[in-house]
Image 1 (tube, helix red, strand yellow):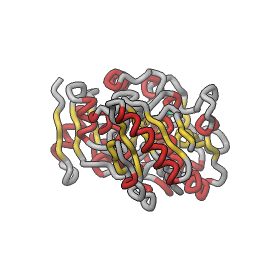
Image 2 (cartoon, rainbow, N blue to C red; image 1 turned 180 degrees about the horizontal axis):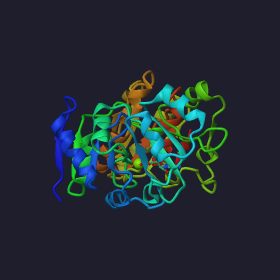
Image 3 (cartoon, rainbow, N blue to C red; image 1 turned 30 degrees about the horizontal axis):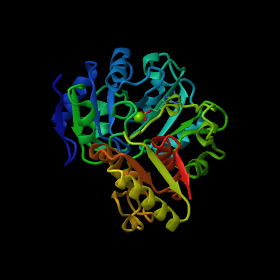
Image 4 (tube, rainbow, N blue to C red; image 1 turned 90 degrees about the vertical axis):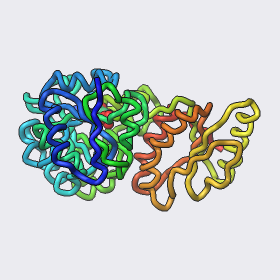
Length: 348
Ligand code: AMP
Ligand code: MG
């Protein structure tokens, strides 16, 4: 299949949106930018279209898709009884990087929900995404537009690396603004539960709906406690080289990473290092990538996946990363980094 590329770096182009919407209505696949990461879209109400997403990504069929809408009024058709919290959270955070898990209506096929009686719904804050959703019929199932297991795409180029020749169209809207997937909150029980941390933090949610819990499967190092979001149990975001997070006092971390990189280099291999702007000057014997500034945590989120992909291309033999416990997005950044590292941490 030839994959068309629509350039919308300068903004929405109606003609391209019309073509993309037509592809979605006919059951095809279109990758598009959102504020979090690039999504791989299909008509969420068409089980065969949803099935194509799983095939294109190599995604396990029990890992449900998020349904994207562009207007609050659209939610009624795909959900059962709505808890009051849904409207409150929508008023506070939609359009935006928040996904709500709700009871599904019979109109949503099990092919979209991975067999579950619940549906995950989000309204993205991106002009291109919202125009596409409307043009495509109002309900677009879209997981991240990467091959399953690889880091999520934050540019159209990343999407093309994984999906060129496999899907009908890629809409290039330039680099995304957040860089990590949405926060997922489960509203099917009395107390909301965060199934995946993201830009919208536990505190932000609590300020609107009171008590909010974190899924125990997210906090546990113990892999036998299964996370509630089916997708969170898989190894994700994984670079080709093994990744280690080095934690401890700043100078000790640098010494340790330099020592490990030096022995890698002595063995004729090259290590990659992920460091904050504030400390990246302190490394030698390695390919160093500056992820962002600790003073502006969003810059760390924005660059994580691109750096993991770059290290794949550079064929480093191992990656050492500093730890990034930042105030608002720290939980989300460390959740993705820990998963990418398969929980391999070196304490110094
Ligand atoms: P992705 O779109 O690739 O970021 O993956 C979507 C994430 O949402 C996965 O971790 C899914 O397991 C999760 N998810 C989607 N639908 C549901 C649902 N109905 N219940 C719980 N988690 C869900
Ligand atoms: Mg994904």
